Length: 492
Image (cartoon, rainbow, N blue to C red; front, side):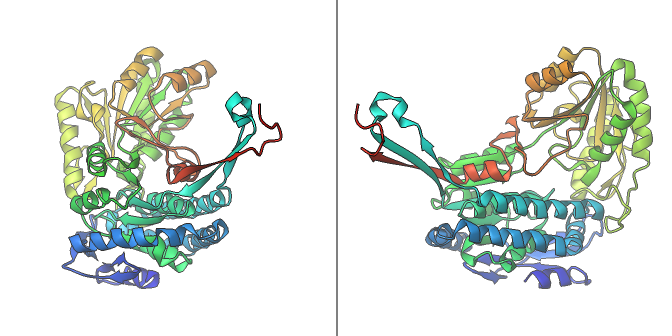
């Protein structure tokens, strides 16, 4: 199936993104059409799941969870290692598919496939280390004479709901870690990237993942809600907006949840910062994937003594970004996910201007392509400051005092990740301690992630941490064994 998907992506015909339910690929029901945001034509046909398909998928998962759970960790690790190698081999072809479906520049899509390979490799390594603990029970009087141990058992059935902005790598995190833990997984693909999702699932199946270990369903919120409510599902991993995350939690009820939600990430540029380095880094990471990342540089707070210098350097760096065809390897900024998303950011830019902000660059669009936009000194209550822009726009604001700018950052309902440029260790530790975020990047922007390092947020940015090791914790349950009368210390 993988070769069929990738070969069809090079033709003029739309790619057929089948579902994978009950151990077989299916194209049941009327198709849904994905229009590529740059090409403006249908690039993918997918087949939204019916109520009966949802029910079949849940029943199949419940029945076959033990099959996956009984696979040896070494077997699961070998499959994931093969998948990592396959991601490298098919890097360019899957990257082209991402560019077609989403308008993401080819260079960014190739980078995403590099991360997919790394993520599967890390998942394989973590699989080999799943174990348990010997507990020190004899340190308490009632524990004397006893031995206690734990091990991590698969949760059973996991549900992975993935977003459009990084459809390959975020699926690799969720599905890779779930399989590493010994679960069967139901994947609900984003409607904007059905073929990319199908390609990653097919890649894993080709690498030896048993059919019992994964199912793929297409559709919208109704399909996701029905899956979340399924009694067979033990754990749900969702990445998306805060509003949809709240809906997932309501539909799920008393289930284990890992929610990686939105953000409006801040990066601080302090008085002692290397301004040229900060401007170059923020330009590169503020507009990659047209800013459609939950940790994309959205708010840059610059010490007032360096504000105009940074703004000039930042403008020069952004002006050099090449905007255009996402299939051109030289393109830096492609299209946003659709024309409506680009129009929303264009509208927010105009509102900021009416509020007194300077539009230093951009502010206009061509269809779904928003020109890289810089908004200088917008009002503190402007949409581009308080909401998640999720687009090719960066707001630049001055600050005078570290405590004040930390309060400004923390006023956000979001708290995913932040960046800071400074050489002062006291400033670094103060920011790390006081910023209400899940992670801080020093001398880098907010938009940086290592796939084997804990990643997640606080407040409306969600809870739980995504990295293979931490997700395996969420995808497993601790089982305890107590052996009476087996300790070398005997009875009290």
